[in-house]
Length: 206
Image 1 (cartoon, rainbow, N blue to C red):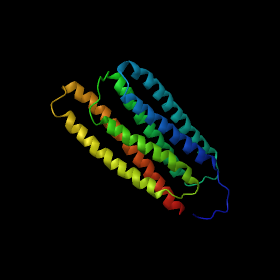
Image 2: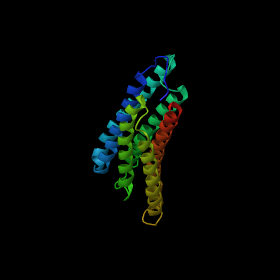
Image 3: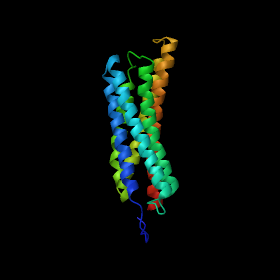
Image 4: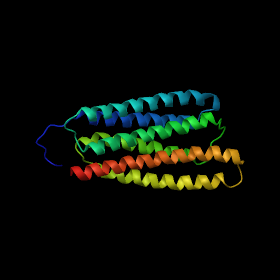
């Protein structure tokens, strides 16, 4: 940790933690979606939409603080990238839930549950990691594990695509389900982008 002679704006740490906690809320709604029937999914989608709006508000608050702060805890570009990547995760999760409802998907393919479990674990790790930005300590295991989870998500995604194209589903259903599993894969990628950004920040600050 570099010694600094100037004070730093510390509210960013709390805002990043709040943004990550909101992502945990989103991941729980995804898990809830798995066990819900079609009549309950619309209500879950509404709650996910509210969580996504809360995520947008958190991101905008970070940007506002960034624009009004003379001294920041780490590079401005890194603050912007981290906030944007966290926001992307929430956007992708909300999109996945919305697609399930809009497409009236009766049954998600086997394997989607594994996708969502990976996202839920990545969300927990991300929320646990954000408070450590204050000291930049104990973060290595976080980004290593998130990268491992993203590799696991890649494997699950490939198996799901193979399952979708095995002839069991009609063409329209394949298009619908593929879009959903692709968006969930994008969420996993976004978690990795957050972890990579945290690693970049930690290296710069070491």
